[in-house]
Length: 369
Image (cartoon, rainbow, N blue to C red; front, side, top):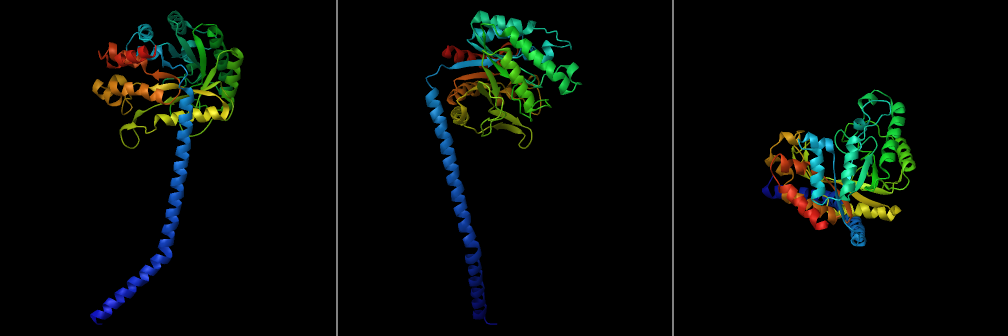
């Protein structure tokens, strides 16, 4: 075969391949391009609509008073090695005027039989009343801090049909005791009830939550009840129970133990949470608050804060990031938020002799006051 014949044969082969590409691949490529363009347009429209709702919500709320509070859990303060009462005194002293308190079932009713020890919660209410602070009181089985579901040991071996009525009597007892307090502003019923991925919880039945809500509403018909969203995903709670307000937790920087084995910064912009609040407002007119704005370090590899150095803690939360948390919460447009980790700020101040976080908190709360 001559060289010219080879060239001609190659040309024919190339032409044949081009025709196959033109007839089969190119039309598919055009279809894929059109599909990609449609998906991109849909994404832009969706994102633009979400952003628009967020900006509407932020704008309509900006004239409302800003309420900056903090959660406080005395048993966690004790775990960190600081005096719980001095910790709360310090929090009130730097201008924190809204507290999110807990009523752990296993601490208040340590023995079966309906005998309650309210001494721990009593002194917290007394200090808040004396300081003119307001309180959101968590009630129910699932409340802030690990293991999330604070089931008494005596109830652990009982079926839900046995312990549920006892839990509801406990909820009623807590609300009856504190509903007349001048400090009480609202309740949070069951913290992140449907969150299945965090905490040692096993019962997520909606009928149980509906029943608890009925008990809470009957026990105190005058103070608002907050129920938190199950997660931060796009969506609107539409099923019963329908509370007076919704709560949402925001975590910005955590340790990814699954894939990257490093600190992970969630990419959600602040306006995304403004969208969640705005969409809820449009849907049913109910307000939303940030009941938990991350403001403490996240220890890596399943360790405790007590097990890691200050330098390691700063990789997760230093003074600059901490100040940014306040700015982020304000930028959502929600006008009430409780920071998470005040006991930790005090631990860094008193135990680690690092005042950096405490000074940021003092500056932020003083400005708001």
